Image (tube, rainbow, N blue to C red; front, side, top):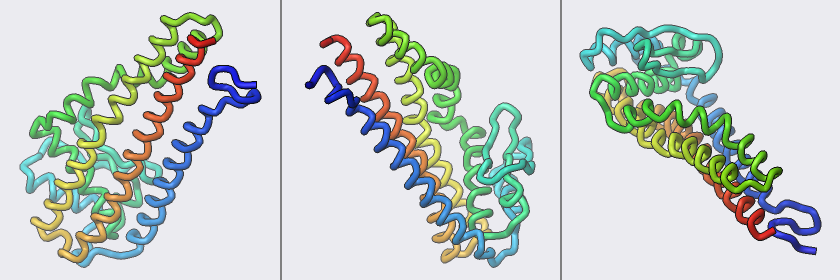
Length: 234
């Protein structure tokens, strides 16, 4: 028996979720493996992530951004509201290629902020929409399915599109930050040319996690559209 998107009671669109999950898991595994490799290789300069970050910011003429340690692993980020480059303790204290590369990447975001990099401004502007979409899209969509109420289904889809848009805009922001980081590391002599190749591998693996997250979200959006279409046919 076949009815809508179901075959013998099985919702085949779950396969889309599984594919997205596998992509995310593969990207995460790649990042952990690459990070683990290059966190064991010390930089020839001996500079820690924190020292490299402060030097990059100084060379970029940015004096109002603090470099601070935070707890956790791979929790590194730049907060444009407080103007802080927050580095996880291993990145902050270690002088490995991985630590210096990640620290430089977060400084890349600080440079973007200081130079009014357009995609970063757009991403910051749509954060509220993305937050609303990530929290409310599925509850509204499921309620629409239960009630067979098309406007709720459409609202859930539109809200989820906001979350997908945020991840789409995130890609150029992250790739650009990594590109800036690698140029700054080599131009300032923080890493030698051969060391930059190692840092590039770390940042490339990190970028893959954003690509995988976007792909997973697009697959989820496709599932919402298919489920809504199936409800119409029923």
